[in-house]
Amino acid sequence: MKKTFILKAFFLVLFMAIPSIDYAQNITTEIDQLMNDQYKADGFGATILVAKEGKVVFKKAYGKANMELDIDMIPENVFEIGSITKQFTAVGILMLLEEGKLSLDDEITKYIPDYPTQGTKITIHHLLTHTSGIKSYTSIPSLRDFARKDLSVTELIDAFKDEPMDFKPNEQFRYNNSGYVLLGYIIEKITGESYATFVQERIFDKLNMKSSYYGSKSQLIKNRAYGYQDRNEKYVNADYISMTIPYAAGSLMSTVDDLFTWNTAIRNHKLISKESTEKAFTNYKIDNGNNINYGYGWFTNRIKDVPVIEHGGGIFGYTSQGIYVPSDNVYVILLTNCDCVSPTDIAYKIAAITIGNSYPKAADAIKISKADLAQFVGAYKFEDGAVRFVTQEGNQLYSQRGDSNSKFKIYPISKNRFFFDDSFAELIFPDGTKKQVIFRDNTSEAKGVWSNEKKPEAKKEVQLSAEVLKKYIGTYELAPNFTIEITVEGDKIFGQPTNQSKVELFAESEDKFFLKVVVATVTFQIDETTKLPISLTLDQGGNQTVGKKIK
Image 1 (tube, helix red, strand yellow):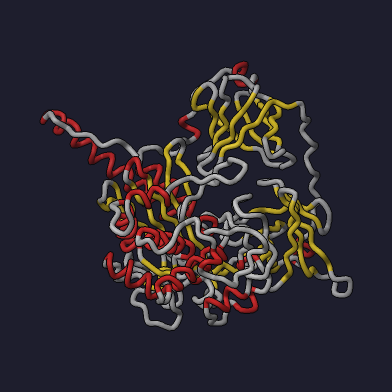
Image 2 (spheres, rainbow, N blue to C red):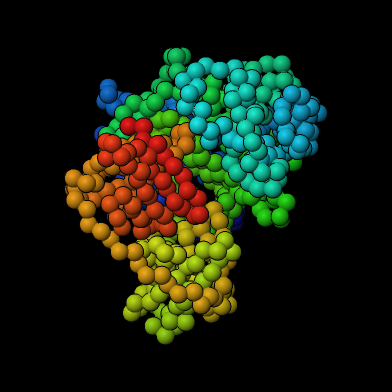
């Protein structure tokens, strides 16, 4: 965020007035254009609120709140906010901490004595930071069996408590919904009231958040936006899920105005102290000393070099993203009523525009001679073993990861710093030579060193007929709440993971396909009798994940 300042001289105020108005108009126009490009008038919709220095500078609704009844979205629409719920759960725990009712170092067995910790010490801190090692219940196959059932919190915990641990506490960071279910239950055990009542009375009522609720499918909720999903290029009503299942990990509903009220309350320490807020916003470390980019209920990321606090959410029929930039006191909250496209990228772009730190475009590139560009050409090996190749064609550099067939133009913003168009990703050569490189985006940073690795030969494409491709059309479930939709357009085949964009697949044999945008392959398993696919295997990053065909 930009530093605030006081204009002491009258002539300076007068001089600055017109440019300030122009600037406000420019960012409003740019934000509106981004939103209109993403959310069409006749499709699913979104609401957005942008605030700066405590004042709303942009608020608008796009698309339809109900496509069947042709009802336009309005800024007052209520959405399921998914994992943004975790902020409320984390703050609830910190409220109880300040009341002396718990310690963050307490073992969870103090409150849940019969929980099987499998010989480990799991603390409240581990639950808050997704470092407990407990298996997330949204990753176990049995979730589909009970997603539509109303469960008590103890029945929900029973569904995952005996699963093997993924790792020892604080050994890794792995996003974990089970941990926040346990936190909700700990709130209930300490207070003697339900999680829903605690949030309603201790947070919503206190902050006058009159359009926020513990989620319900049966309750009549004024201005509810109806949720949708994308199935084979067509919108359908979202699958049903009992709101007892997301519970304290993702059950809440709200509006952009109420969430602005929430963010303001956190910033002004209305619910928890400054000290507790700093705990929530701390970037914690695991045992190997690495930061996890997560605090208590918030991710800690950045826009270029500007720190941001953020969290998104996804649940059947809805996606959300909230970003707070402390240095500029800027808040962006975006809520949508389809789980087909994540709003994260556009929310980051809007936050960047608002703080005057927009991502660069190709037109912003400076000119560098061919000889100066050539010094960066080569292979760079990163800490995780991945290799990135920098190549040159004329006055243009390209970046290509591993054996991916896709290469991306990179543009110089300075003599040793290059950016990817329409993106926050960049390559930085710290000492101005090819000895080492840093790949950075808004969520991660990785260091690579010069390597003599040779670029692998590009995979050869095999042309398959539309008739052959069409047999792969369908929905394949890789995990509960995570599927890949396979579609065909003409003689091209596409895959679309849940909450991600559609990408083209390229055949290397009749049943094996590769991606160009990332290093990954998709192989279909064929039933010998019907000659039709029964599953697919996604091979990416050394992991093979099988997805059973469900539609």
